[in-house]
Length: 75
Image (tube, one colour):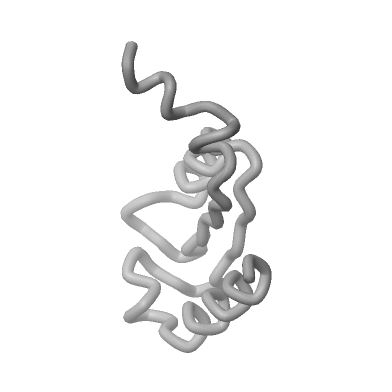
């Protein structure tokens, strides 16, 4: 299949990924969020306690802080 060539370590695997777990998301459980992380080996994980599905609205300061940490990690 043509698309399989895109999912190599040299291509997709070289892109740094960070998942943000919204700990109070009631539309996507933490278990489901962690399954998504497990499907993307090598990804970093950040968590935001009390964040619901719209973390940027429920915990904007915490989202900002997480984004700053991520940006500092991958200069």
